[in-house]
Amino acid sequence: MSEIVLEVEGEGAVAATEELLQTPGIAGSWEPATEEPQRDGVLATIATIVGITVGVVELAEKIYHWYQKRRQQPDPTQRIERAIVKWPIGY
Image (cartoon, rainbow, N blue to C red; front, side):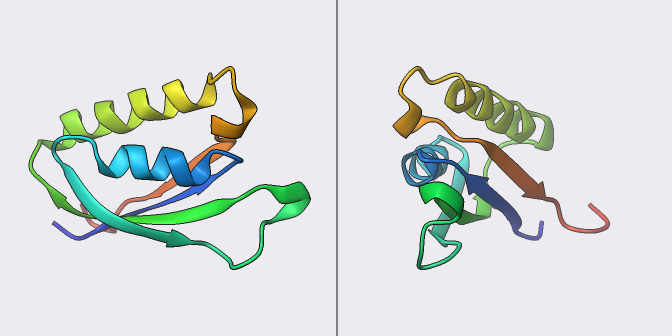
């Protein structure tokens, strides 16, 4: 399987990305999308998932639950605005 790339945006992007990559069955790395915070201090990260020890459906469920949890955070500094998943072509 090719790598999967996610772009995560929001004040809690760094913490959310680190949390996602600590999820059992998912392995990867992340980096800031830019050196400077984007519009109005919003951060963005790029996560690259390279190791997956679960099936595609389970992976999708894990990412979905992570996303829902982070979108509904009561603390705005831990919340994300959006996550864009870039699945490999032909998968």
